[in-house]
Structures are given as C-alpha cells and as structure tokens.
Length: 215
Image (cartoon, rainbow, N blue to C red; front, top):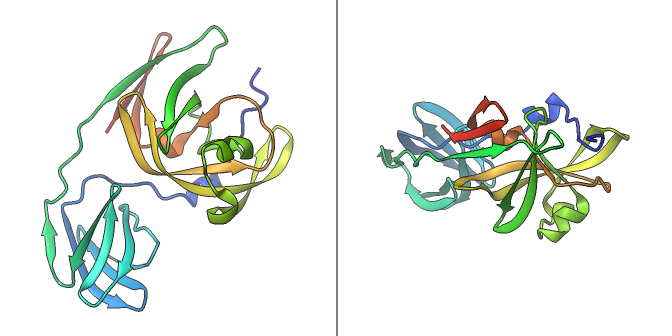
C-alpha cells in the first residue's frame, strides 16, 4: 500500500531552485549592501547574500573586493569586474539502475548530508520529502532554517518546511544543494525521492528496471 505517499503541490515545486552544473562565464559586475550584481553566461541577476541565482550560484558574502560565491558546493572569492570563463568543467556523468520490488516499488539505499537513508523513488512527487522524525535523525534543523509551507497528503493538508539539503547520493550519483520538504507529521516508510532530485537526471524505464543518469 502506498497510501502514505505524499502528493505535493506544483506551487511548492515552483518555489524550488535547481542547481546548474556547467557555467561558461561568470562576473561580479556590481556590489550593494549585502547584494551582488552577477553576470552568469550573459544574464544579469541581483542576488542577496544567502540567496541563489537561477543558474545555481550562491552569494555567500560581499566584501570590498568583490563577493564570495558558492557553485556546486565550492566557495571562492570573485573580485569585482573579473570575468571567469570556462572555469567549471562539466562533471562526470554516472548512472544507477534500480529494480522494482515485489510490491511494485523502486526502493534503494543512499545518503543525505552524508548519513545513510532508504529512499522510495517516485517521479510523481514534486520534491524529496520526509517526516520530522526522519529529519531530526539526519540532523536537519528544519525548525530553525526551514521555510514554512503547506502540502496535501493522504490525511489532508499538513504543515511542512522547505529546506535545502547539502548533498543527496544514490549509488555513484551525487547532487548538491537539493531542496526538500519536511512534513510535520508521522508518515511511515522510507524517505520519498522526488523531482527536486530526479528532475536533474535523465530517467529510463526498461522492463522492471529504472535507470537514473546524470545529464
């Protein structure tokens, strides 16, 4: 039975920002109080400290010389007016094949923020989702860093928190800065591996196998 599977609103999914992994040109073009003007592959963005551009560039801090930016989990100082080209080499592409079990589910082991977890893969779910007890076990302080949200579950509407996970791993596939939902309730079963992770990958079905491939 999959009555505990969480149905997430498309509106909540739209609030998530996915990380890009190949940036050809990056430049800090201006500085404001706690904000940086970034040119990312020719597109201008004004990004506040702690926020992330649509391409996945996070502004960590702003200083007199420029800004400290984080890309794909790595932080570096970028001076004002210095254009960085082809600095980010496209990552290696890995794939992982998961087989359906006797209950008709795709279950696999992986990790979140370096801690082992059990995932239920569901392409119909908008985001990675877990309950509050699972989040506490993983050391995720959703009550401190989470953004309040509301989701629809099998039991009705429930309170939730949007958080960003440092890393999510399935086999050899690693994704960083992945958004997730922490549901304020006691939903049983493994953590739901939804589209905030799967949407970054190519997915192929063949018989009783699902193959996940990094783009």
